Image 1 (cartoon, each protein chain N blue to C red):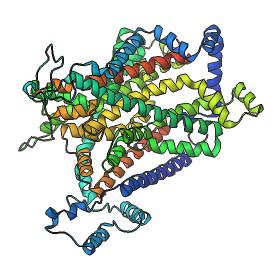
Image 2: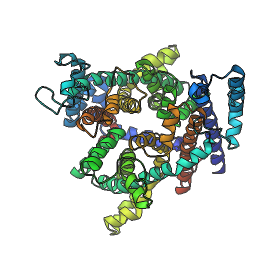
Image 3: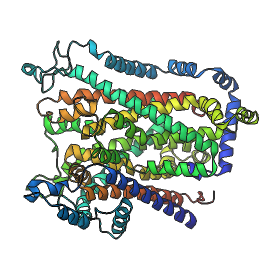
Length: 322
Length: 311
C-alpha cells in the first residue's frame, strides 16, 4: 500500500511538472506582449522608454530565456508566491483564494445534487433491467450526456427567471441583501446545469454495477435466506456499488472544473471561472497561469484521492502488487 | 481500473469470453464471416431507435449540405423584419438583423459538423497510430506513451484550448487541431487494448514468422481487425468534438466571424433572450439532436458488436 501511494504520488508530481511546462510554454511562446497593458497611453499618460520597460519586465519576472523564466516562476509557485495580477495589482494567490469559496460551493452543491439524483435512479434502472422504467432512465442519461451545458443554462434562465420569475438569472447575491437563502436561490440554476452531465455518468455506472452485483452469489444467498429485496439493495448492493462511484467522482473533477468555467460565464457566477475568463481576455498572464495550475492541481488531487480511496474501501484489492 | 487487474484476472476474463463464445458458437461464427459493413447494417436493422437516430442525423447532415436550396441568404439583412416570430415565410422567425433563423442554423450546421467530423478524423488517426504502436511494441515505449495519454487526460482540455486561443487567432484549421489534440486519448486507449489481444492471435504470429514488417502487420492485419471498435470510438468522438466546439464558440473562442457555428449563434442569441427566446432555442436544439443521435448510434453499435453484452 505504501509503495503504491508513493508510486502514484511521484507519478502525480511528474504529470504536474509536465502540465506546468506545457501551460507555461503555451503562454510563453504565444504572441502578444503582456506588458502592452502598461504601455497604453491611457495607463501611463505617455509612452514608456525602453529602459523603463526593461525594468518593468525584470520586476515582473518576464525577462530572461524561457528556461530561466520557467524555473524562477516554478520556484516562486512552490513557495506560494504566484506573482502579481497585471489587472488588479493584487497577489494572484489572494485573488484566487478570494474567488475559491464561490466555485467550491457551486461544485460541491452540484456534486451532491448529482449523487442524490443518480443513486436512486441507477439502482432502480439496474434492478429493473430492460423494463420501461429502465428505458426512461437511460433516455434521461443520453440527454444528460448530450446536452450542451450552456444551452441548458440559457433555457433555464428563459423559463425560470424570465417567464416564471422564480429564480434570479445571474450573479450570486442581490445587491443590498445579505442572507444565505439569497445565495442559495442564485445557486440553484447553476448547480442544476453543472450537475446534469455528471448525474448521467453516475447513473450509468451505478446501473451497470447494480446489474453485475445482482448476479453475485451473495445476493442469491441473501435472497434464499429470505431477506427482502429492499434489505439486500441497501444492505449489500448499494455498498458494493459505491466503490466504483468513488473513483468516478474523482475522475469527474476535470469536467467539474471546465464545466464551472462555462456555467459561471452563463450565470455570471463570481467564481474562479469568471475570474479565469476575464483574465484570459485581459491577457493577465500571471493570473491565467495561476488559475490553470490551480485547476490542474485540483484535478490531479481528485484523481489521486480516488485511487487511494479505492484501495482503502476494498481491502481485497492489493494495489501495488501487480 | 484496468491497471488493477492482475495477469491472472485477465486470463480469467479471456477464458470466460472463450467459454461464452463456444456456447453460442453459431452466432459467433456468423459474425466472423460478415464484413464490417454487413455487421453495421444488421445491428441497425434490429434496433428501431438506431434507425430513427440515423434518419435524424442524415436529415441534419443533408439539409446542412443542401442549405443553399433555402430561398434566403444567411447573411442578407432585412431590418424591417427583425426578430419576427415564426411564420410561413420564416419557419423559425428571424434574428436581430432580420436574417432567417432556420437558414442560418443550417449554414451553422455546416461549420459545426465539418469541424466535428474533421476533428474526429484527426483524433482517430493520432489515436490509432499511438495506440497500435503502444500496444504492439509494448515495454518501455508502451509505458512512455501511456504516461503521455495520462498527462493529456489530466489536463483540463477546454481551459487549455481557451488559453491557447486567447493568444493565437482561431480559425477552422487551428480549432480542429486543438480539438483533436485533446481527444485522441480515448481512441488510443481502445486501440491499444485491442492491439494487445490481436497481436497474440495466430494470423499475426504467422505474418511475423513469414517475415512481414512490423509496420505492415499493424497496418494490414491489426488495425483492419478492429475497424468496428474504431467506428464506435469515432462516432462518440464526433459527438464530443461538436459539444466542445459549441462550448468554445459560445465562450467566444471558436470559429471567427463572419462564419458562425451553432455555438456562436447561441453566444449571439444570449444577448437577446429577453426579447426573442426562440433565437436561442434553435441552434441549441440542433446541437442536442445531433450529439444525442451520435451518442445513441455509438452505443447501439458497441452493444451489437460486443459479444459479452449479448443477452
